[in-house]
Amino acid sequence: MQPCDTLLVNIGSLATLAGDGPLLGSDLGSWQVLNGPCAIAVKDGRVLDAGTQADIESRYRAATTRDMDGALVTPGLVDCHTHPVFVGNRAEEFEMRLKGATYESIMAAGGGIASSVKKLRAADDATLDRELRLHLDLLKAHGVVALEAKSGYGLSLEHERRSLQAIERAQGYAGLTLVPTCLAAHTVPAEFKGRTDDYVALVCDEVLPAIAREKLALAADVFIERGTFSADQGRRVLKRAKELGLATHVHADQLSAGEGTRVAIECGALSADHLEYVDDATIALMAKSGTAAVLLPGSTFFLRQDHWAPARKLIDAGAPIALATDFNPGSSPTASPAFIMTLACLMLAMTPKEALACFTRNAAHVLRIGADYGSIEPGKRAAFTIWHCADVHEIPYWFGANLVRETLIV
Image (cartoon, rainbow, N blue to C red):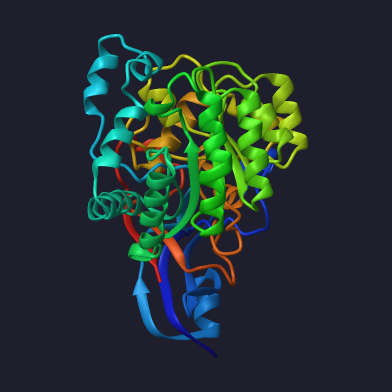
């Protein structure tokens, strides 16, 4: 028998999502769940094998055995779009929206992202570290083992650097893997009001080169939307990021129909995120490109928007898609992938299996961490979400409930 460090036994249902690359089209929801009792063999923090308990126990002996007590076990969740470096909250804006204010009107009045920028710039590094770790604790408590961590509330070289340095210091906190992204092009800071081109020049000539040189980010992002950055300005940011060796993402077509998704495809971005207003022609282009669609229904819900991302059209076209929380203090203050899965089922016409695949294997693909995360199979990181339920379909069914029994990172 082969020795291993740990055997996880008495797994009631095991969703491995094994395989390479993203699940596309009908494959997104047609993968199989292995009925228990099942087991997983782990050695040196990696999966050795997974399957029926009878088979695994016949071939492996372990120093430690852990009883999963009939639980559903899935790959640890991957949240591929979050904004976790912020201070305080924007609860006052929630009430403003309840009284009729829009996201865009709040931004125009100096609130929104600008409010978070003021708070972050005023905070010391110890406060940034403490707040970030509180946010990471929330995400892990809801089953997340790896996440993209964006900056974007600094909007100057000094404070974007401080934000990304906080992410760097938090790398490995509670066993989590953080994939850092520089979102200096989130919006135009107050000191550049009316001078958007000058701010884009700062991002391209100073911020991104420094961040790339100091290896503080693996990617850059830009918000292409009316009132923020134009398609041409977005292209400048994306092309400069690519020249510096950074991968790219785009906030696109969230509040209005625009060119954001097409620019993402044109510039070879890893993903275009939001896509509430993406059109059919662009969906067809996306299906032929390497750019994934990251859908963020939490922000659509919280902003009370009427347009929801056309998930079914994207899936049917064969485009790679993922889901994420968009965890942030303004438009999506949720750390719950399960709730996002509920919204995906109810509002985006996705199935529970499709939603889970979008928070595991496909999300790992978006962040290019599929060699370590997104599925349970030999060689992958031993990082699992253990659920207080027996079936995958229950995850979005019990809406608003945190069914995560344990986020286990061995």
